[in-house]
Amino acid sequence: MKRFLIFVSANLFLFLLVIAYQAQADHEEWTIDKYETLSYARVSGEVTHGDSLNFFILSRENCETVYNNFTFYTYEKPADIYQLEGKNIPIKINGEELTAKVQSISPFLMGFRVSFSLGTYPLKEYIYRLNNFYQKENKYEIEIVDGIDFKAAKYFDIPNNNWRLDKLVPSVLEARKLCETIEHVDS
Image 1: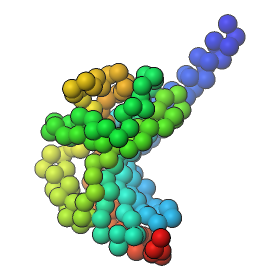
Image 2 (image 1 turned 120 degrees about the vertical axis):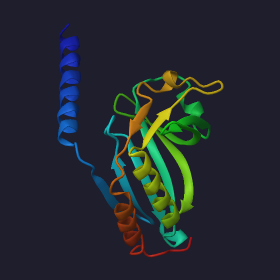
Image 3 (image 1 turned 90 degrees about the vertical axis):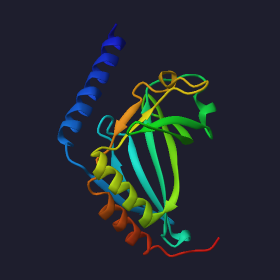
């Protein structure tokens, strides 16, 4: 009984901590940084703050290409979750049906963090197009949906998230400038 109370107390504490943090984080915050041979701009989700929308820029591509991905945290723990790696999963972006490729799955907290690829694009063209899309729609929401032989609820307890992209262009351009400071080393 004592272990149960400790378990419940610890989970309640974590829940309240997350709620307090989300209540504080009601404005859009971008993280812009570099790591080894790449730079990135990242914004956290509004539904699940730990989910991120990422824009990676590689120095070996002369900082002209952006790799767009996003992550979803899931508390679901199906035994076959790793079989999703490398597969295209059905999603909707603002209601439009697309697919995203599962890049990686890793244990995280009490569940898994799943990383999805949206593709690689010419940097300036892509971010300005995405910015125009966001301005027109006034939202950027991704929902993981059911598909052929795929049930979203089996793998994702919260299958949707949205991100504020008001600072998309200046954030990604700042990450591009940071990329240009990385020494290009041919391997």
